[in-house]
Length: 273
Image (cartoon, rainbow, N blue to C red; front, side):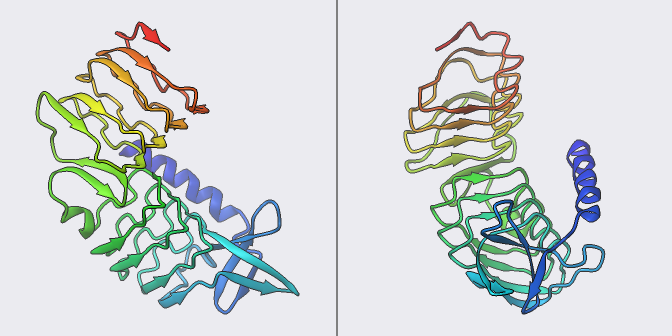
């Protein structure tokens, strides 16, 4: 936890010193993506939260004669906007950045459109969320995306799903637990099973496309062989870090990205194929 918020404080410093936006239209600030062809929503004044009430984000915005599609909600775009009551996100948006709605205490309900595929770290953490609609299009959810929200607290202990993503195992996992992800699961979230020492086996179905960062970190009870299905294209950094009981892992050719330390400190691992 301390490490997470240390990194967070460094990010805040970096964002404050950077130019926050390129232009403002109808009360919403935008910054161009590196290609200059599309934009994302960003904050106006980080030290003084600006957005409040009901905000409707359009799918396109025109500035100086050029029309830009709005493709994402940027990192910390609405951070600490306690007066924000509702947000309408258009179908042009494909990602919601880290800490985008963190500490938005007045935001109680959100519907995410089915254009969105990823939700960043802490995106809705410490907000007032009691309900959220997450479409099946979302395949990646970052660490603590819904941390300290009523929505998460109201979930029963066990594996909590956010849409079709195995988001987080809530509570203490019992010893000798075997889990089979439900049919249609598209992703395993960052830190989904971290330190779940009682987990002895996991069955990952052919619908899963990504295994998140540190998803099984410290699952020392995970033993024997593990077969990753050929639907998976990415394995996050530290995904199986310190899974000392694993003896063999089968990785399909479909995997094009494996993060750093994905299988580090797996002292029992003798075969990777």
